Length: 247
Ligand SMILES: [Zn+2]
Image (tube, rainbow, N blue to C red):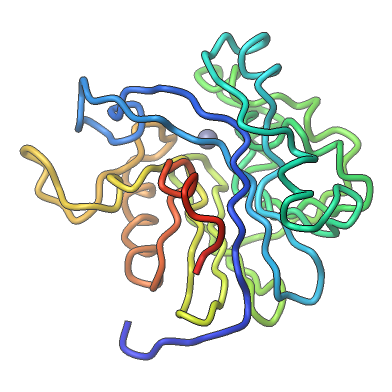
């Protein structure tokens, strides 16, 4: 980036759960046999006109009892929000990166929030491919106040969404102006290594998400984020367990 555009927003990572995973479940064909402690967050953005959250999150009850994952709760949604000074009824807008269940389960807990989602993602949850039937649960979007967008969209003066498909058909990343430049929360499940230096025989600047509906789109979306962001925020990286705010 030659010219850094600054703004007033601050992102507060709110970790809800952790789970051990093999890195290769995130980095396509790389890091097999290395483990990582992936983290499920919601992200509160302060400094915009209204109170904005990125992703509605999931609870361990759903992840363990329904999905059979081994996940451990860090805190409840309500206590996590409380630590940054807001409650579920304060949140007016939830930007939904994508509609995998682990990102949308808790949306019905926000009584006043509009849920911003890409058109392609909404169509997919209503009619998912059989390979993704487990990850997409129609019931989680039923009854929500959906705000459907198509493509890159300016959400407020300092926040915009970027259509970054590939992990899912309508993954959207969230671009936020901060005092240290543009922070982009990846719209797809990723860890830092996805954006880091290449490993093994993969001589590419990024490693595509292991889970994808279109590998080429996923790769191009990652390159776009790497080019446009001053600060990259990979959606599931554990580093934000130790960071209370970005920047
Ligand atoms: Zn995820």
